[in-house]
Amino acid sequence: MDNRERNELFETAKSFIREAGTTIREKIDKPRTIETKSNADDLVTEMDQETERYFAEQIKSHFPDHRLFGEEGFGDEIENLKGLVWIVDPIDGTMNFVHQKRNFAISVGIYKDGVGEIGLIYDVMDDILYTALRGEGAYKDGKKLEINSYKKPIEQSILCLNTTWLLPENRHVEHEGIHNLVKKIRSTRSYGSAALEFAYVAEGIIDGYLSLTLMPWDVAAGAIIVHEAGGIVTTAEGKDIDMLNRTTIMASHPDIHKEVVENYVELKQ
Ligand code: 2AM
Ligand code: CA
Image 1 (cartoon, protein in one colour):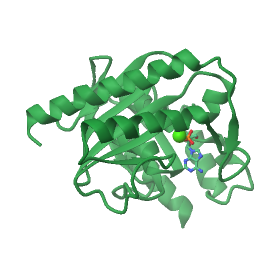
Image 2: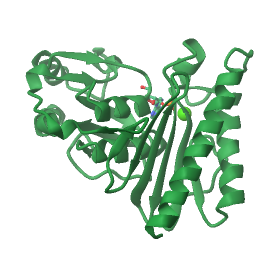
Image 3: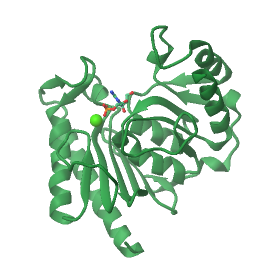
Image 4: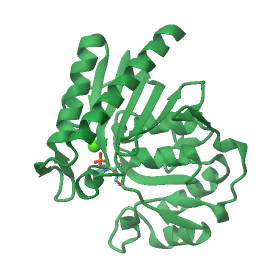
């Protein structure tokens, strides 16, 4: 894929994501069927499915040799990332979509042979598009995002994390460690959409995002956007991300990444 082809793909992907978002906005107040997946709090609606089906149809008709790796199963059976693969979450933050009718996003990462080339996160209700092309920086509605242009001491950092991990019964964390981390930083936030949490790290309004369980479609676009904004994206253990399987995530401003990872690794021992 040369630069011209990549730019064309970028423009087309942007048009798909905006079109999908417009449809969701138009239908936001219609009554909807809410089903559950893995547990009673894991929600899916017909809008998640309709939106992914739209991407599946568009990709098939415009780019028949590309593959789709999507949350709702309208894409391909993906066992490797050979060739061009669109990794799509049609609605990231479905619980927010259902309860709040805001604070959800469409997330599209386009990977070539496993390398992230294009990242798009569309905050649907606010009509804000975060974009990145590998090697060309990250942007919010065309404005360049550069979090590595300023310093960020850990004591002045706000970290996104899912506050249910602080519950005593949560088996993912050692509580002393996570409590120490939370005391060290300035504060925590939890927005309920991984894609938006990555976007906010890239924007610098949040300094880090620590998650202990995410799927590739939650991560694919955000990892490219945070990296291109000057941040660091690894697993919570500081390792490279496996874009085919469930993963932990630590995405942050470069100044705080090492310390949070060290803290997390300590917790696990
Ligand atoms: P979703 O809305 O697409 O399901 C909420 O903290 C974030 O975690 C959302 O981005 C949500 O994505 C994601 N999420 C919810 N349940 C999950 C699960 N069982 N595994 C991985 N990610 C999940
Ligand atoms: Ca989803």
